[in-house]
Image 1 (cartoon, rainbow, N blue to C red):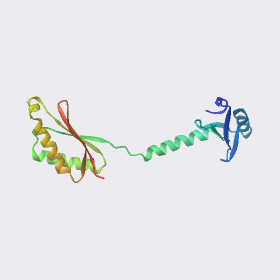
Image 2 (image 1 turned 90 degrees about the vertical axis):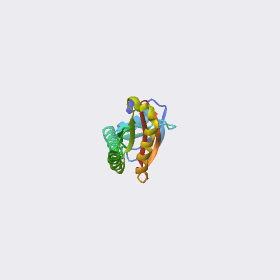
Image 3 (image 1 turned 135 degrees about the horizontal axis):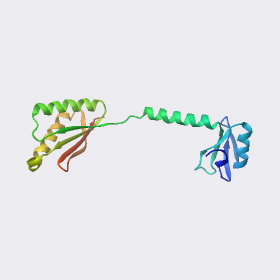
Image 4 (image 1 turned 180 degrees about the vertical axis):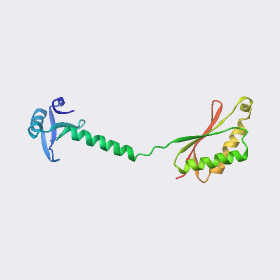
Length: 164
């Protein structure tokens, strides 16, 4: 809220240079801001009384967006990569998937390992669980299980992340 939009009875006013001016009515604070040729901006609406500051509103908004951009730039997004296996996978194919998973984990991604059952393969869920366990055994030194193997429809899913 800025200038006339501030309808509070009393506000705590901070000057243009950051000095505390004190508690006064919002009209009086608005007139002080107007005399300075600047805007009255409500900085902290939840405080008792609300805190307002005398600033150039355009410059204030620009700095707020710049701070938000800077914070967004510094945050790291963790991506989830999916590795798909099948119950009748061969050992060499499994080793290839393990190597690919190691690369993903080194980049800091989380891994979703899904083993899809088709047709009559649903009768052999124990085989699928063994494959996921052997997959994890090969990755034990670089990965940790976030969520253990669990059936989700026709797929058995397990989540892995890099060890710290």
